[in-house]
Length: 82
Image (cartoon, rainbow, N blue to C red):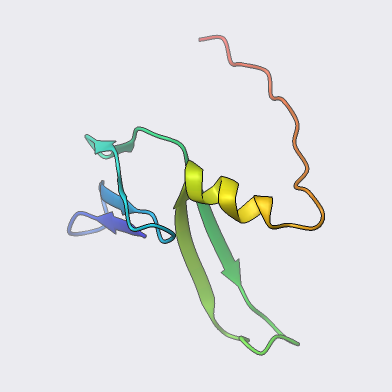
């Protein structure tokens, strides 16, 4: 769950929806790994017209994907040179 300063201009906090832990945010920047889930449900869904959002710390994300019968697709990304 993301919290923003008044006016939605700067990220002020992120809480893991799985375990409730506050993730590290400094100066409006999230300083640790976090999975951000967002889904807008449409036609043919029992949740039509709803948008769901959640954040998971890396530990809770690992626990979630460990339960999948079909594993997630992973690929290594090249590091960006600055």
